[in-house]
Image (cartoon, rainbow, N blue to C red; front, side):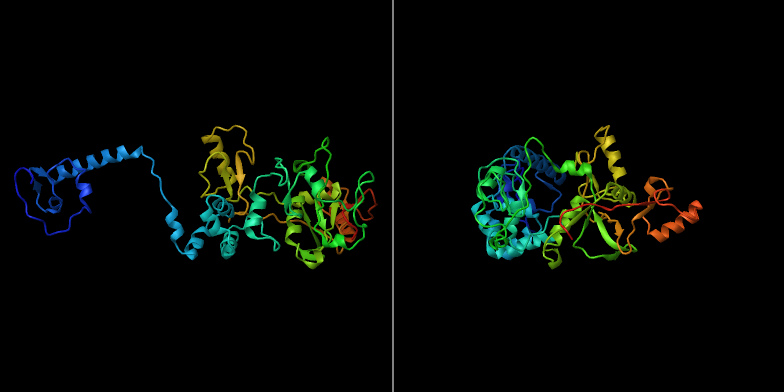
Length: 409
């Protein structure tokens, strides 16, 4: 009944689902059947007026409810089939799945059971930037090892390095109390077995260096030194038109050792440290990495480039114009997203071994820029410098490549 006029029940379906929404409107005598009418006006109100009043009322109710905290219950997700839960969680990062296992006991029993092994393998397969799990560990244990806080597992000391050889995190004092030295110093207790006893080959071991507290040696020091090394265990192969071995940075040596861990010819590791002269010549031939033209750069102050990576030049312009940064610094203001689809891997330089390239031109600047075989250097001196009879130490300089070797070849 609106305005004393009786309307018959409509034949069409009402546009509202229940009487609860009808009560929100400012008409106390309204009826649910009235909202299905097809007439132009209802009780003197046009349909446009009624629509405007209803919109205003709905907005008022939304404003009143906006300040209320909406607590959502996600326990119903656990009622889904396990296959569907694993399919959804499979798109998460392994670290996110590890965090899920620490929220509730119910979710922990879902992702940390033996049947969830396929979930972890799928997550690691979709995120190739995460280090691969070794065969001797499970994916959850490996995730906890590489992403957990740097705490000593025995005493809880903070800022402890993870020992990946022993698959644990221990401080120096706990390492001394939990493990023993195969070759202890003279003033320490002797080892329980002789140095050449077979038991040492059966026990897990670590090559962890003991550094004095008054002379700290960290990765930044090695980055400053920036050495170049050769893997002695790798065979001489044809690479970039030369027969030789790849020259690695020290970080690439760590990755190479992990990748070749299961190869029979890499049961032990041996490295050649190159001399400063050879290292300088090698660096002149290396391409700049990371590449400034790769669309793999992002701003470290905001998330504008997270889903749409750009070149370094575009990121520099954004940081300077939007964030007003005068001196832009890599890894602080700019980030290079390694592992992205536009990431161009660094191509190592090959050092010729067969035949050995161990001579350089003393007449050319920049250390000769190139390493030559003895016969080809003679032709180079004749063609470019007009020297028919080159003299050693004056026209030809023999370069020593190897400065030090970790183990005898």
